[in-house]
Amino acid sequence: LVCLGVLMSMSAKDTAGRILGAFLPVCYFVLCGFEHCVANMFFLPMGILLSSVGIVPAGIDPSILTWSGALWNWSATVPGNIVGGALFVGMAYWVAYHKKSK
Image 1 (cartoon, one colour):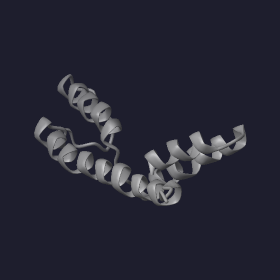
Image 2: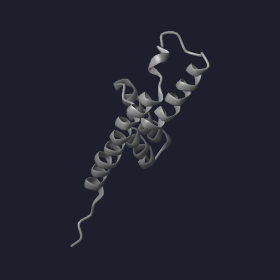
Image 3: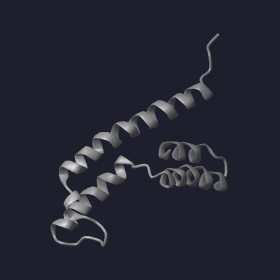
């Protein structure tokens, strides 16, 4: 959905279309609770580093913030983002814009 938001905003002709093209897929992405590997590559190490010095937000169990947990998370989110962005969005654009040669 993030990749789709980027592509939709790039293909819009005016500013309002660009804003809506980026906002709606990303908003849906957040509402569904999906995880993005690039965001997790910042938030998980930052959480691990902060918990190692004793800074943990209320309601967070610091024992779950580990490097093995981060690697486990990335092992699912990275392939999911590759498949979702490259396969689904790429195939949809190929079907929409592929021109058959005569």
